[in-house]
Image 1 (cartoon, rainbow, N blue to C red):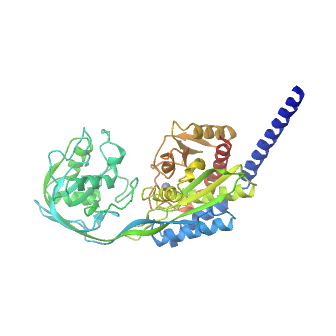
Image 2 (cartoon, rainbow, N blue to C red; image 1 turned 135 degrees about the vertical axis):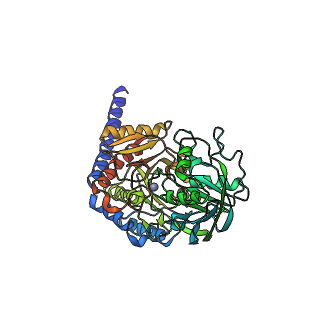
Image 3 (cartoon, helix red, strand yellow; image 1 turned 90 degrees about the vertical axis):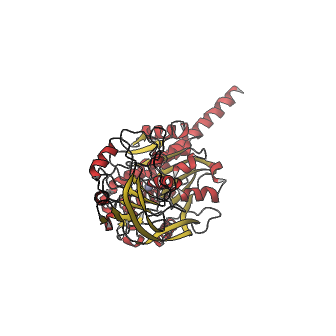
Length: 475
Ligand SMILES: [Zn+2]
């Protein structure tokens, strides 16, 4: 009896050892198959002019989704059950500006025309405005800094500074341009003029802002620092003095001796088609899945016709995703199934990942974990992995991948990409990224393919394979 048990145990150990070795051999074959040039070509393609910056709901985004679906087909990936030709279609609202008059400010000292020192916000409001201007500082409504207290913007144009003073603690969601517009609207403003601050990196830079269209927003504009000087000149005031006071954290809310006039024409379409691309590398255990995702949408083209190519954000993630899938399927059958998603709608507020969990509500039950790849260009030797502190499964997988040799490090938790959709559902999730929002090319027209070293993409694909393997083995 005893001997039988020992033999049985020995056999089990040998089998387990063998399969672990087989599994590692599969991982190493996949890692060895990574081809840097192949990954870089995908970034060059998706960041090229015909895709026009891939804004969700535009022909450029549809074209990108079709190209990715075809690339996945050529790589031999499966299409998930219930999904036709790799594409999941959903609907998004699309707001596009057709004309903007520029702002005219008439005040105590004279009249000035801001022209192209002002722009219509790319996602809010339609119609013409002529009303008195009221300065509401940074437009915050926190307990410490309620900038609407003591001023009345009902029927007026709210004039608001961007950001918040460095000495204030203001929740991130109060700083978003969209949130500033919504708060002005809630206080009855009929128009919103947001002023760039002198320390801003470049005028009209939309970095860090959600670009979701705001239904029923008052016509809203953004004014450069130069434009703001001209606007306050008309009111008989010195913008730089005022901005310095505001930046120092002193309340500056007041009624201005100024009437502001402008008109925005925009097309508002509440439902245009957008596309997620979905694929599968079937595993030995098809009932347990990992989702590897990235997003192919970006900011599109601005009012001057400048294309925002989004090579790093996030054509790079889509390219690495494809390479990982290609190498995985060539290296044999992985231990569990790997689902792949190239989302759209990320820049508009994670709409594509939300569309997936709505269309396939049962998916979350079988997900072991979600790995989101967003911006693979590196500013340091390794990649950062954003993991929630309480997510022990993901934390362990990342730590073991690091022990295996992956150049990864844990970075603070953020909700800034599609992994947040899944973590909100209780699924173990992380975001892998080469840098944060401080990179000079982030959401800028300078985010181009030729600036992304192929070595960054190659190393990202390898490091992601290390992480995926540990996650696939986790129970
Ligand atoms: Zn992104």
